Length: 306
Image (cartoon, rainbow, N blue to C red):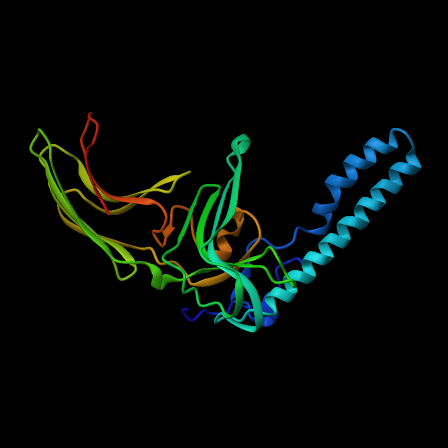
């Protein structure tokens, strides 16, 4: 696995240090804060029982709070044990029972249509590991938009008694494979002409565009990504006449992460991905797209698989 840079020392904000000082391992779904875990249960139970007896209502709230505190403390201890076992380079400080595979996380905060999807896709049987080397990985995907985050990352599901249910996932830039070139050309009825070449290489999507306008205003070349629940377009190059080139990095920043549930878009800053970015180019369908913008008419479009 690629060398990972450690971040500044700190904790996750929930009293859990990240990997005992190995802060290149980041918590994307840490244990819920104690008040958040207590309030829903205590409020509902307290209101129901206090209608019959005020003392009984207070007792129910106290019991719910105590149970939530115990669960939180248990999860915090399990998480600490896991982080203390995994080194930044994937070498484990003690063998762990785990299963290799991929973790899929989709979190969309689109108002009343908010959606969360989280699952682990195993690619092998559980066994004892001394190193997480991501040898089973074939690619990855991280994509972010306005109030949504999508991740498909090689991962290990922890089956060990110390900390079951957690996933250790990685962004590994060396998994981005070369693609293309995709070649496109386009003529309009008015005589406008454009051609483009798009390829993935050296960790970036690169485009070369030639445009000869007659009446059209401009031409552009994009990468169009169909990621399942979301679609994105990434502009690569644009021209109002003549030659133009452009390149957009798609490898992202290497990192190792702990997950246990769908990852909120607010965690994008921990990963380092910004709105409108796509890393890895895994899982989805990708096309090169050439567009000639014409006044008072719909743009002329040509597409080719990438």
